[in-house]
Amino acid sequence: MATTIRTVSILPAFPILTKLLFLIPIAAGLFGVLLPSLGYFPDLGGNQFHFEIFHQLLDHPALPNSVSLTLFSGISATFISLCLAILLAAMLSQDGNSGNNKNKITRFFVIVQRGLIPLIAVPHAAIALGLAFLIAPSGWIIRSLSFLVMGWETPPEWVTLQDPFGLSLIFGLVLKETPYLLLMILAALPQIRAQEYLRIGQSLGYGNFRSWLKLVLPQVYPLIRLPVFAVLAFSLSVVDVALILGPTTPPTLAVLILRWIDDPDLSFRFLASAGAVLLLVITLGSLFFWRVSEWLVLRKWRNWLTNGKRGSGNEAHNLAALSGLVLLGTAFFSVLGLAFWSLSLRWPYPHVLPQRWTSRNWERHWSSLQETAFTTLEVGVISGAIALFLVVGCLENEQWRRVKFSFRSQWLLYLPLLIPQATFLLGIQILAVRLEMDGTFLLLVWSHLLFVLPYIFLTLADPWRNLDARFPLIAQCLGASPLRILFRIKLPLLLKPLLVAAAIGFAVSVAQYLPTLFAGGGRFATLTTEAVSYAAGADRRVIGVYGFLQALFPWIALLLALAIPRWRFRNRAALS
Image 1 (cartoon, one colour):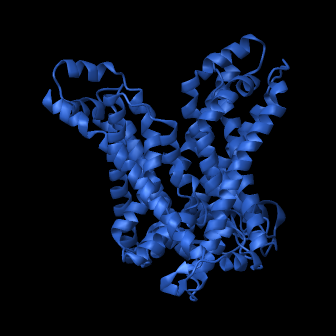
Image 2 (cartoon, one colour):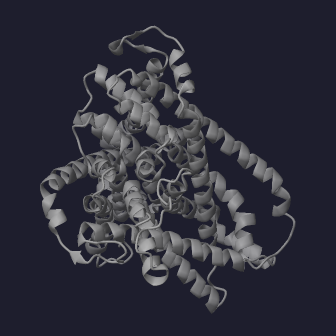
Image 3 (tube, helix red, strand yellow):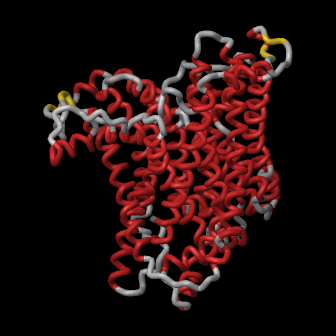
């Protein structure tokens, strides 16, 4: 009994420690970037507060186009991703018990779902690099068109990559964010018993799609508002994808800030800090604009929800099937293109496949690959293990102390995803330099932990909370301590969700570009930082090597997460 009381009394430390891990770096980062933006940076000669830096920022010739490009690409990518995710979720949620034709449709969308969900594990930079190989004027699509139809001897002079409107950037973001939002919607559906509402709509003569839009969507959207906000904030402040796919003259605001940071003239650090503050204001303003737009759309379409009009929804089925196939096919050929380029010795235009194959590209970079891959693996495993430990402690605290996860805590969990990385990470770097902590492994792991922990919590929370309470209750009645119940009952029963959460956390760590760049201080290279740096060069073979390995690491982690429980519980089908 004393052991049980002592164990339960330790549990409140987990949420407190987790909140401190979030609040301290974010608050310090915002503080560290605000002071230089106001002219105070003693190490660079700034000893007085003033607003001259913001005047210089507003007078910069590249700023208006950078801001407009940031807003257009970020809001457009979020809106398109959300619409496609809603469309696919509506088709995946339909009841397949209404005839053979609908059963076939349901099976088709399940195949699309199983293909799209693993895209979450592929880093943004890997998808962007593969997409660049696909849509470039000498890319795979143009080569196929030239071979099959057009017969072009030289690549056409089309601006399909890094176009001035950011369309390729939007496409790359949609390719990655749609599966994430789809997963969030599918995870939220059981909370509102969506199938019951669909059957009610069908009994009133509505089709599946209209039933979903009128009855399910108004209830499920509030549950995914925070993920949508996270996608919007990321799309506005993304750097690695914008470096690969986005325009360069001018670039997006986040890339422009990175250029100022990398400028040899250290006085540009003041301008970068002011730009980071402006990016934060733009992001907060966009989130407010999105929230107001939600209210206006709901007000405008309230009559449509109750007008009683029926419809077949066949057009929606066709559109969902087309969009799912386009997303899935584009992602597949993007990663396949990376693999082909990494193994090609000679691949001239307009040949669709390499003329000569070789493993020399891998052998030539093997020594540097080993060190980079080990750093990626080390940071991902350590940050994932710490995050998993904290998340399990927080969830155990919920159950043993009957503490409900508050709405405020949920916002705190999403805070690193809602604030632009370039804003508070730049502030952390400035303070780390002052404290002589820049370029340390501890700071690198901590910066990754800020983004790994939210995803692990979101992945593991529902399976943990939905575990049958009778199992731990029986063990407790037999005198088992909380630790014994955790290790002998809960962890074995939840092995698969635990490993999947760890794999997703590892994938998030592999994908981090700015945290590695700022916290690592150039002393630590990961597959993502190397792949993005090589993307500025012209050697597609080297880009293919690093990009494909970057995509391969999270896939291996996810495959192990699914295979280990199946092997461990091969004689217990319900647990595998």
